[in-house]
Length: 212
Ligand code: ADP
Ligand code: MG
Image 1 (cartoon, rainbow, N blue to C red):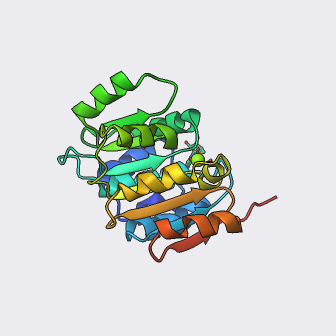
Image 2: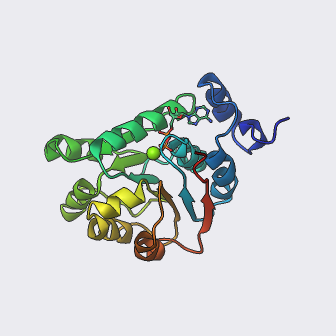
Image 3: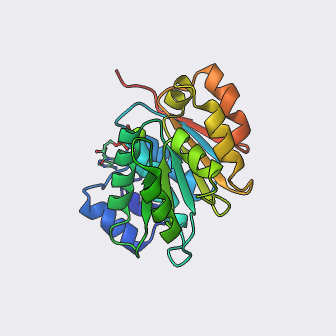
């Protein structure tokens, strides 16, 4: 068996079957490097260029750990833009297709608060959102992040560049201290290293160098 096959990971048969049906047979390099660490519940800083399959890396890890019969926010993904949040939610829904009902909700700016608050009353297992809107929900106490077990900072470099640091820090402080934190980024310059260090506990670091 090829050592970069998803089948070598301790994933559920349903997840493996789903990955197969999506045509995901071999792990991408960043997935092969990060998934064993993510499944071992390490905090992680993962750096790889756009298009390298980072969403499935954290998505598979998050879904693996999730308890579908516990209807509370167990996973939170923070993304820089609405477009990226929608893409992440779409990929998570594809990855969750064959598992028990898992509710994934996006919370981004540009849409009215009212319907989002109503959706939050109904609950979700996973939230994918942008920093400003998540902070607004926290400010109105319309979201409870105290049950988050997996926190993902996706495209962390872009979020810091866009000036979202304070919002992110506020959102992170509303999550339990006992959680797994995964930081994904295309680049990991010193300023982001310094700024984000306090969000992670003894993180493992993986990096896939650009090939060209
Ligand atoms: P990134 O976040 O690193 O920019 P994405 O997570 O958006 O990359 O993934 C890029 C594309 O690769 C998506 O279309 C996704 O469906 C596909 N993909 C991810 N993992 C695999 C895999 N193991 N095998 C085949 N395609 C994959
Ligand atoms: Mg991505």
